[in-house]
Image (cartoon, rainbow, N blue to C red; front, side):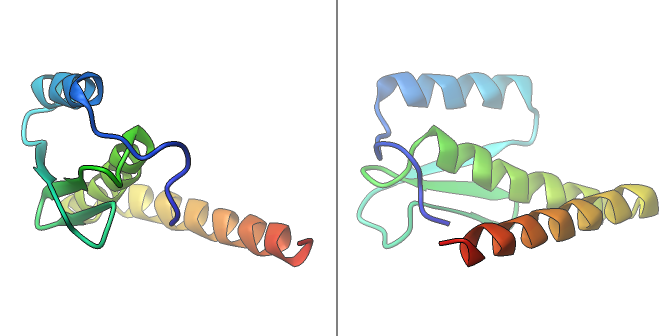
Length: 100
């Protein structure tokens, strides 16, 4: 996914992320430098690269964290709902790209 908006991790964005960390026990975020990616989610940690990531990157990676949580708890209804949403998004994305 290409980050939308200006890539920036400054004090204000770090403050917003830190606020989310306070309100979400278990949320782990690592700010990195000089990485090839803007953000990634690996083993319960969100990694954000300064100069490439922005708030959209954080929320995108947090979405991966939510999916991991849903799958880890094994709630069949939530998993089905998640997968239905992915299919809907995939279908709409393909339709949008076919118009380009």
